[in-house]
Image (cartoon, rainbow, N blue to C red; front, side, top):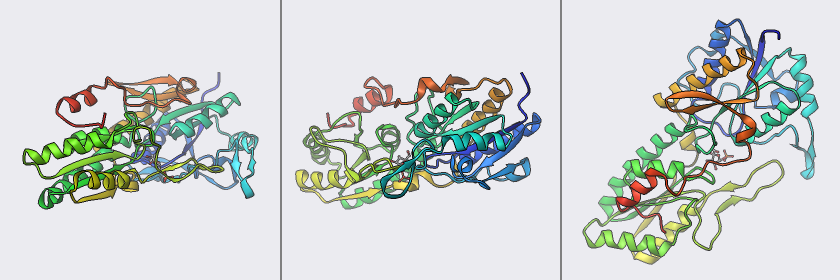
Length: 359
Ligand code: F6P
């Protein structure tokens, strides 16, 4: 079997702090193994449109370790197998991508992305493209890996925001509701809620009863804590209710979640008679420099990706199984979501401390 000489690298889906750290690690360790790297711009668009790729040398990635975003650009629409066109139509550009892969003389593709991007990568695997996946998402919902890079940075930011809201909530004896991201998983809400000392944490995995939440906050008032902090995951659902959407799914776009924090805020105001305010942290959770944990994880992922390329172990995703970085088959992880399990130690610990999840 011939040696790998040249690999493509792309970033897909929503950005997450640490993408640049992975790119840097891949390019540097590949160069040190005599492998050239080609950066593809804006996810798979770099394989669909000509002129959307460029060589990446160690010189090109110097200084990007600490930068948020991605120097390659990204998109969370534009699946080459169903590319959105005019008036709700879709086009299959997958063969064009395979042709471009060969025209660029690539031997393998390193795909850094979340569940959607990795599912596309898996489809290309079945079309004969040698793929290595690197799991990315602030939501931390990819199965097979304890952590995705970006999650720690998002939790760190949300915790800092909760700390700031604590002081103003206490000063005004108010209830402050914080809506965090995470899509259909409650990891960011759970970790930031516990780290920030929230009194209620509402996550998609546990449909909540607003009256139970209000009861707990009223109890706090009774014993003298006249303020409360409530963390709401964007995907949280009231018992018997539905998710709050900013926009329903449409061609090429997944549904956009948001608004549950404001609904909870209004309901808690009515149920407790207290002043309430809500804050949406939104895309602030995706911006800024990665934490040292995420830089190290991203760097280890990038290094492991190149090791797998060199060994020609394709169709694999690098993953964190503390303390090791391991390889998992991409086909085993696509189409699944890693939710907060009911027996999560952190969930049970928070409950034991008196945090309500509204159940
Ligand atoms: O998957 C990452 C994420 O930030 C989710 O937490 C959030 O629901 C979604 O992406 C937002 O996507 P967009 O950038 O398209 O608004």
